[in-house]
Amino acid sequence: MTARTTPIALRVHVESQIEKELARCERGMTPEQWCEHRDWVRDYVVTGAREWLRNKAREGQL
Image 1 (tube, one colour):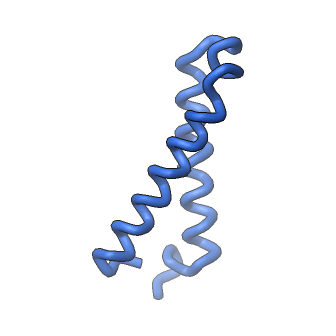
Image 2 (cartoon, one colour):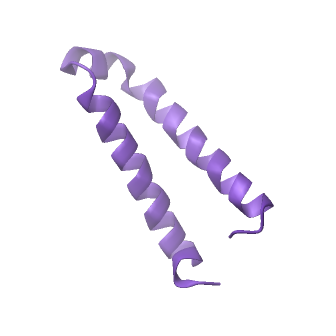
């Protein structure tokens, strides 16, 4: 297991990517739009991260 794929490092990496994507989405909306849509956007981003992790694991890259 490499330093990047230790459980803690992997979690930190994925959480960082989620936060970056949420910030990018928020910048593209007005505050009112973000307030209205942030819950489903967060669900969508987290689901995408889980799929990415499953795919990487299936490919033997984790």
